Amino acid sequence: DVKVTQSSRYLVKRTGEKVFLECVQDMDHENMFWYRQDPGLGLRLIYFSYDVKMKEKGDIPEGYSVSREKKERFSLILESASTNQTSMYLCASSSGVHEQYFGPGTRLTVT
Amino acid sequence: RKEVEQDPGPFNVPEGATVAFNCTYSNSASQSFFWYRQDCRKEPKLLMSVYSSGNEDGRFTAQLNRASQYISLLIRDSKLSDSATYLCVVNPNAGNNRKLIWGLGTSLAVNP
Image 1 (cartoon, rainbow over the protein chains, first blue to last red):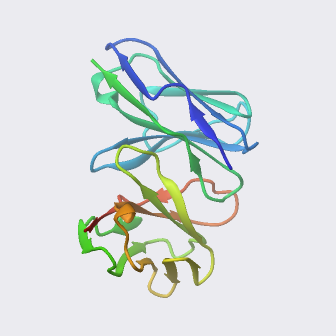
Image 2 (image 1 turned 120 degrees about the vertical axis):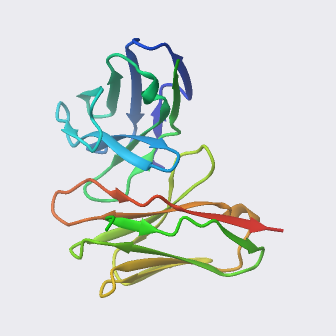
Image 3 (image 1 turned 60 degrees about the vertical axis):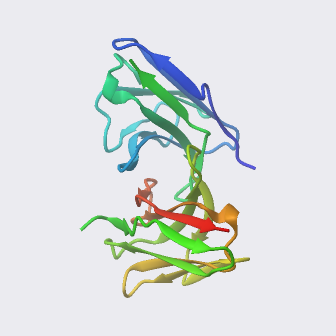
């Protein structure tokens, strides 16, 4: 089975803090994705990566950056957290153009 | 028109009922389609992939109608554990596109 893990299930940070969310997958997938999910807005793609050191902006990249130094690991960085970044963050991985597999999510609260 | 549209529901059905959801998509070049289920405060999980005209897995049947650009999900003999949000997902075109387009989901509540 594909396993995608995320570093934290719940996180509380203060406005202005730098926040790191990490995601690791164990299926040698070349593609990795970061989404956020908010009530009524569905899943929105922040960034994705199709290879080590490669990244592409998704639909809502503002306020975020990413890092992919190893194939199995994809990090999402909030340079200066703001209250409007309070959300559920979901990491996913896939192979080719096929279905995506998700980690359990990180519920981030910025106060 | 949204790229992927679903009726948000909620659909409230009794145990044992048959329920169907439809999902429409705007890009006629779309090649592959998926249904995910998402339980409250959990991650989406793949339910079915639909690559040709349809797919069946036990009580679940997905059908694709390319002419009308919709996919459907049929759940027979509903169980209480089927209560969840069902997400329709579309890969808008073939080639190297890796992004998926997500519907907002249809909420299902199966009642005793």
